[in-house]
Length: 352
Image (cartoon, rainbow, N blue to C red; front, top):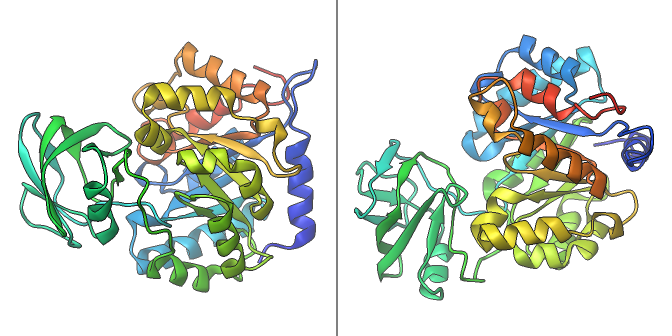
């Protein structure tokens, strides 16, 4: 459990991350761990470059793998700096594909979405969420995958199966997100894996929990009761309803993330941009930091430098009051995880 004095100190530090004539003071940089950042030497380099916490996406790992990685990461943190946090990103009510071999979906091809945990057929994608199929039946007929990089159009809808045509294709791999943006239907809950992860890590001081696809303050209040008052909870704002209820959600959360990837999949790119531009960061619960997530430095997955547009976007976000950023693919699978952290810290202490 996180000691209250530690929480209060961190919140005080984050509240002080305001833009002033002297520049941006300290702020949070959360680096997602993955194949590109699995070595302890890389972890140390990312901390030296500016990372203040690590993130582990638990949806891509089984319970045994999570246990081993958490033990290893926490051991490293205790030997380096106990103020470095480890965020366990829980699946929550987010829909994800099941297990299958990665496949390229050709535009115009016909595929099947099936309510199962895994599939051996290239033309069948497993979706282990019964409520997804109910949502499709109540929608206007749009399905998007992997942060809307791929889109499908349903042609026939059954209780546990959807036949669909590929409208925008691309490569798709297991555990990627899938959503039906035009349907509000979704069963909000923690799955068994989420609860087991919490049960096995709740006594570790450095752990924070990020909750995906929070609907509103009522759902977040339920999670607070489940996790208890001492757990550090992060509400991921990825739905229109959660953005609108952000102020109330913040009363049950220690931190908020405005997640542009899934938010864009839910709302479309234009509406997502409007929401991010007008999001009232400074009007939320005092002491609850708000971080920006989703393709912060997407270009740095393959390049050692960020685009000027990405740097300008980071500058504008910090001016608006965001307390930091969450790096995802940049540090998990990108070629330059350390440089990505360095770039995220470009405005730290007003020293570009």
